[in-house]
Picture 1: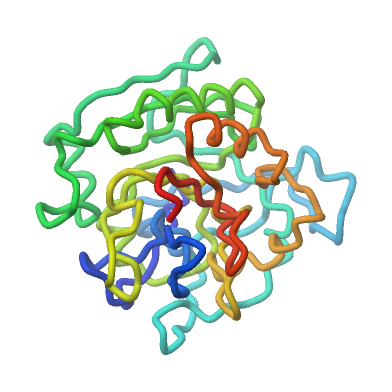
Picture 2: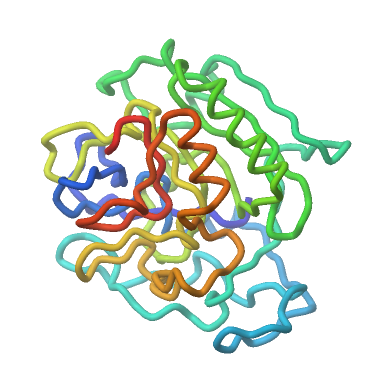
Length: 300
């Protein structure tokens, strides 16, 4: 897909990858497990220039069919001492973010929900790159590779992919079945890769993803993502925030949860209800920080 959200490898992590998955009591680490800043390499990033672009204004009412006019991944951010990109205001073109999904996998031909659950094959393992290693707390035999249909911001059906814990695979599929039925929009859903790990942050990524093997920033414990027990949904529309840290770094507009825009997760959202149904909790309900993108089976 054209939008490969990536984060800098500058953060000190057990397996060279930054990530999210903090519980309510953890120190600030940032919700960066599914890379939410950065871009695909220049030669691989597809170009999309929709013709119905308009400049967004505060709470516009006439942009239902327009796409965001922003070159994703093309604006590297200066780095803070903590390794994050410098936080900045949301660019006007992303205040009401909407991009057409570029298909990495074939979309469902009939436009209906489809899913598969299978092992992490050698080919999938190769694509995962640095996001898993034998040092991780979960082995490949205890993980499953999923494909699920999702509805894009373009209103079309697409095929996404995730790696999650084998014990949670069937339940996770049922959640995305419900999100598809409710037409909850998801921008992209692909496997994080080594390219994401190594990219400089740009703060504009929005990839929905599951497993990324890494420790919390302090290194004291593994993230729930390291076990395949957490998923981040539309990170840009649902940013992480604690103190002066907002991740993705350009997503501050979406901290205003009273302004409901497509792809946002609210307490009454179908996403919250469906993940709760399978026993997962939501980082948007935490008190010491807000991790609106983060769903977890462990509470972290």
